[in-house]
Image 1 (cartoon, rainbow, N blue to C red):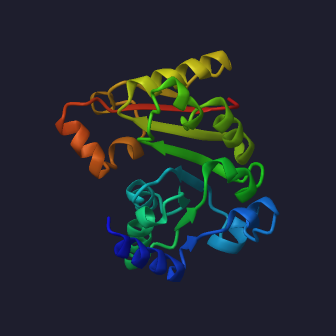
Image 2 (cartoon, rainbow, N blue to C red):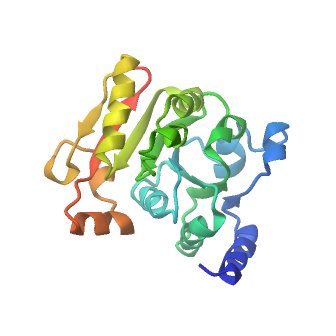
Image 3 (cartoon, rainbow, N blue to C red):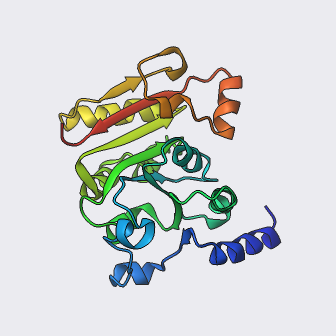
Length: 225
């Protein structure tokens, strides 16, 4: 993407009513007014809140919102030029239950209050296979502790990926924490026992993976049964 296009998208994001872009200082200094008040201030309802972390273009966030009008969805990514597409589509289609947030995932504790979130989706995150990149895996212990803090006691984490490595790595972590998965499927399109939101939504890259005969895996779990 050219720099002119990026600048244009950044400018449009500033005008979109469904895009929230706090500064790092605003979060760290606890000046973020939506903290703990997403239902009341932003969505203006009491419906469950679902996050998609590393949402990219926002395809999954938007489609989850369409399939689940009684839930609120927030797509989160540090790259605003990416989720611009999802934000624009949501406005064009008048989806009132979708917002996009530009921030880093390690700052989520400054964005959401304890027990404020009902579900988290991780859709095709970079598996960060190299050992020295393990701190960037979105299911590493550091990130899991952040998710646990903002999730309700029965909150669910969904991991959908084409990476058997990340699936297995996460399973291993859960075992070490004595957490039994709710679902663990190694080929979602050959397994009937998966939630509809797993197979009814297919991203652009997912369709490419499937054409390459890559298996799509799915894992879900809760910190408290």
